[in-house]
Image 1 (cartoon, rainbow, N blue to C red):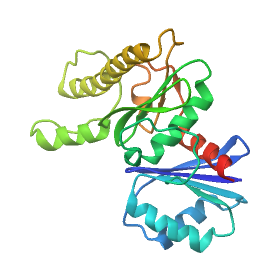
Image 2 (image 1 turned 60 degrees about the horizontal axis):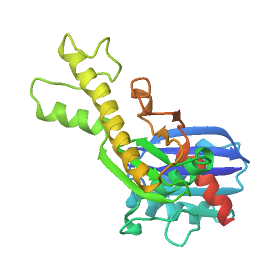
Image 3 (image 1 turned 135 degrees about the horizontal axis):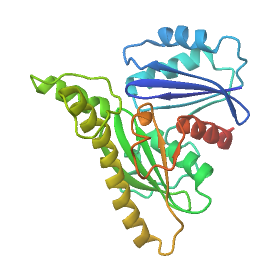
Image 4 (image 1 turned 120 degrees about the vertical axis):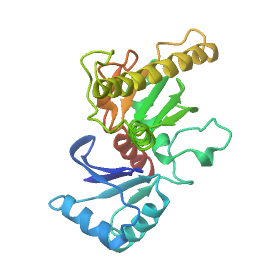
Length: 258
């Protein structure tokens, strides 16, 4: 079985694949202060009972990746390991000014989106995490670039910290867009506001794609990330929700490098 690990700035998501089927997944907080030994204790408790035959990792947190490498060397040296970094075959051409700037998670998301949904035309991956990432995938599976915006939780935290009479609220869909009290107004601005931001960016990206690829098939928009469920029901442009898109991409990259 293959263990896939996506280390994000806020959370780390792990998944176990038996062939192409995911049989179990976990979401734990990311702490850059964790040592290799602490990571081993955590991972060992999670995967106990599974016989691992491979490991695939991507990380956007350099400090965590450094300790993770040590943990892998000490405890998983006996199984094939793929870490998404320069030199690894992903099959994703990066058509950007500086490919080294592109996060590993965005690359594997591109591969997974094109593999799952790119049979007819381009794709847009909207990853709702610490930041909100919109990644654009060409009809050939190339990474064309995208847009980055502050994430939902970061924005809510910043507002509560800077506005004396505002506070953090439960992020749920309010009864109406016109909030009748402070809590509902904050919920409306957050939920509908971020959905509107994503829809607006998606529409502008599609306009540019139509210029690049005249007569192209309809663009597919895929949502992923831990905060995606907050806006799925109010966004007008999201076609599919794939919560494990990054882990699927890690499985695909590992298969290419095995």
